[in-house]
Figure 1 (cartoon, one colour):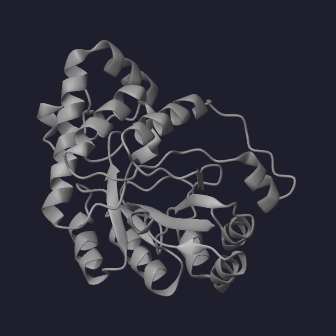
Figure 2 (tube, one colour; figure 1 turned 30 degrees about the vertical axis):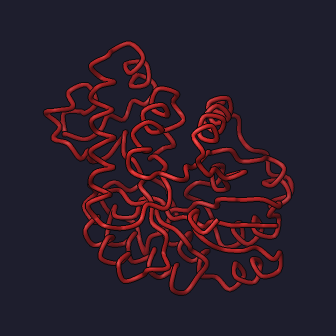
Length: 278
C-alpha cells in the first residue's frame, strides 16, 4: 500500500509561504505543513490552519539560521550578533558536544518551541527541524525526550533512496554530499524505539528548492510502497526575510497544484494524509 504525506516546510516564515500553503492544500495535493512558531508569519499561519481543519500541522523546530523563541540573551551559545540562531551548523554541533551550557540552552529552546506550539491549540501531527538538524545525535536525544512530554507521535527521518530519483529523472546523478545517512538511520532506530511513526523514505532532499511540477509528478509516478513523505517549500513569490537563496518557491507551489500531480497520485493508488492519519 502506498501512503503519502505531502508536507510544506517553513509554514509561518512569511505571508507568501502561508498563502501558498493554503492554496496548495485547498487546490492541490498538500496534506501537511510544518510550523515555525517564532517566525514573522506564525500568527497568520495559525489562523489559516484553524480555517483548514483537514490540514495536518506539525512543529518545524528552528535550531539554526532563524528566530529563536526564547530571548537571545538566554541563548548566548546558540545565537549570533543579530539575535538569530547561529548559521555555522558544523561548529555548533561541535559546541553542543563539548559545552554543557550550550546543551542546556538548546534543551530550554526546544522546550520553549514545543510550549509555543501547544499554545496554538493545534493538534501536533509531526515534528521535524529546519535544515534537518534533528538528526544530530545530541539534538535527536533532546527532541525525543522533550517531545514525549508534548504528545509527539511522528518525526521526519531524512533518507532519500537514489533509485527513486533515478526512476523519476533518468540519468540524474545525485551529487556527493556530507553523508548524513548513518545519523538518519540512527534517528530512525531511536524513534521507533520510542514508538514514533517514521516515514520509510523522505523525498525532496536532492531537489530541495527545485521541486518543479515535472519532478513532483515524476517522483509520484515512481512512488514505492510504504509510507513516504514528500516535502516541499512553496510560496507565492520570493523576496521575504529568511528565504533561501536560489529556491524556486513559486514553482514548488505550482507543482503542488498542477493537475499532473493529482493524476499521478490517482494513477499509483496512493492514499494521501498527514502522519496522524496513518
